[in-house]
Length: 118
Picture 1 (cartoon, rainbow, N blue to C red):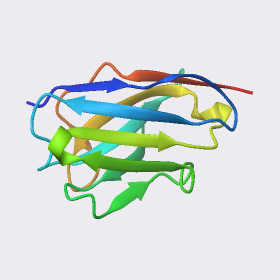
Picture 2 (cartoon, one colour; picture 1 turned 90 degrees about the vertical axis):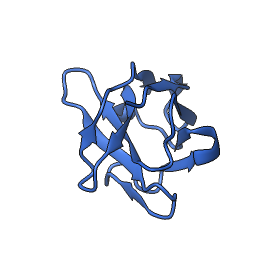
Picture 3 (cartoon, rainbow, N blue to C red; picture 1 turned 180 degrees about the vertical axis):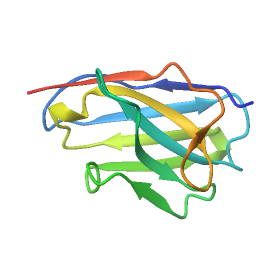
Picture 4 (tube, helix red, strand yellow; picture 1 turned 120 degrees about the vertical axis):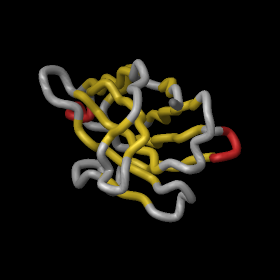
């Protein structure tokens, strides 16, 4: 089972940017990978996904045009570039392996907190 460690979160003003990193203990290249966000008091929700080759990406409507998911299979790492951040993006962000329906499977990492101030 792949172990995932997220990093890169922090406190940023609205309109700012952050780059999240997900580092894996094992080989990620065979998996579709995704980012999920969990806002306070809410369920964890899908944010973005990228297939094993990096050739196709998927985004939640709320982040299209602002967030970009990429991966580096040689480094077993997935990234989430977050631009034009809004207060409603405040959440703990987790990366995950997902199936072809973009549903999570496997273990969750500890997540990384993103806080956007207005």
